[in-house]
Image (cartoon, rainbow, N blue to C red; front, side, top):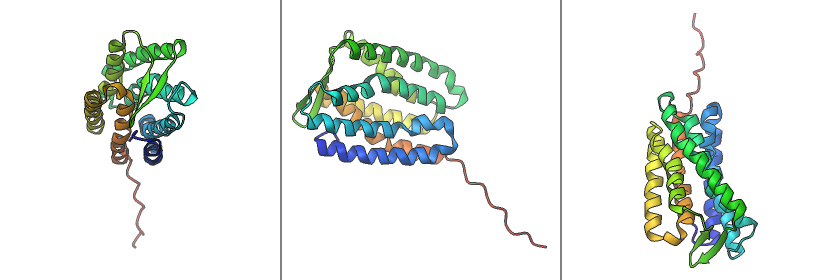
Length: 215
């Protein structure tokens, strides 16, 4: 993942296919659809990064599109989707990461409008720079909204997904600090295979057809 344009393109196509399968499986549970569609978003995101590679980084449309998905959209999408799919008993507490996600998404959207996001090819990774004020606070809000909502969901499958993404976040921060957001999004895309299994497990059982009557 994210080691070259080809790797992003192939991985993005694969994750998008996983997302399409998830959406098809979730068709009978409308509340699950936003989460089921998350791999589609993450797969398209990796495909967009292939375009960033192709243009040698810079500040072009591909870089902006990548940043819009990675920053404000995911900060809002994930906690909202988790709230939709979570058990009723967890929904009240999930309002907290949703509110934090809304605030974080607003701050990130404002930064994208008022500042220039740039991408730089750094060996086999891509580094993105936006020059966020109070970056530590924004990152904390982002991680709480995304990973925190999964861990608070009271659903074993989503908690597992949250743990895997959290581990990926920690590893990518230690190994690729300057390219953190790119490598973290890539690891989250790989982990989204877990969402396919989660959707499959929640799929309603098909009704049994009545057998032939015997006299």
